[in-house]
Image (tube, rainbow, N blue to C red; front, side, top):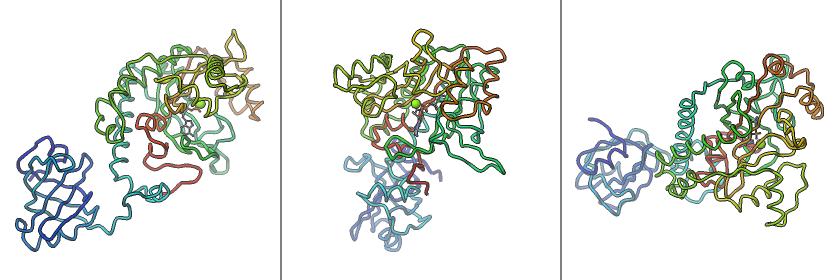
Length: 431
Ligand code: 4AD
Ligand code: MG
């Protein structure tokens, strides 16, 4: 006999089926037992009748607990009262693995679900999110392949910080010290002088000392770097990448989006729109005029300000030309307005969360050295990086997509923790 998935069974609509999976829900009487069976693809209602399977097997059915694993055989028919519209009348089944009383029921606290993450992963919500994440990541691979980019991997253990010393994780490295990657970028920049157009997908680490719903200590950044690209090229490319990936998610995972309460049609319409680009100074003008929020030029935008500006947009917004003084050492000054950096962030509509950060890269070694010193760094530690500017330097640019932030946004999650199977935050590194 051949087992088929629940999804295949629902497509088959009638006839004999053999299924395997886990008990998602159960209820019964002295004559019937209803089991909602779950596998990785969907759920389906199954009915076990005493007069059909006999006393002995019915006794086993009567004791089935949530999460027991089963193989069953039966006949499929339409039933509009069943949760997915079909029911299997079981004539034979076998318990594969018994289940203790499953600790997760309805209405449990965030804390409890996080403590039991290894079990909570089986929920329909988490399953839907993990599938969307997988599709998103796979779509991104397709996108970069079709754009003729080469995948380039960099070390996770790195000799310096790159995005600010305050959030770097230090790791003992034999007798020396090293740091967990905050970004792939500095290595990516070395890579473009060989490969021109490259990308990666890998874990990055930030010792974020604040507890928010948008920060993880370990997250998967999806970065790219390209020779000959300027700020305009790279920010337009970011829009193209995200539009493609979100469209693929809609194509393949609409049911999962709906299960999470999202509207695929609305999302699709958003990807078909123009995503505007404005300068940081324009953001300050808009939120001053429309929201009466005053921000002095010179600081990065804070959560409230990002939220405020995004109340005026219904698609992602690219903000460029942030103040140099608030930006990383590698973001170049605009040659015309020297306090503005040739960089961009992409903000998500609704929440205003920064989902992408990128820039053109500075070619001015002296300026970068000064800015590193001002951050308490020793420019000598970055000599290998400055070498790229010494030997046939060319303009180049890149960006990093915060994968979990994009997933949280398109899935409508209220906490970034649910966008990754096993979250790491300041307060949690188990299970
Ligand atoms: O803006 P960030 O810090 O930029 C960089 O690291 C650049 N070196 C990337 C590049 O140009 N290659 O991080 C990029 C993105 C952010 O826009 C955000 O979406 C995400 O990474 N991000 C985080 N996501 C979850 N938790 C955190 N603690 C994050 N920090 C950044
Ligand atoms: Mg940023």
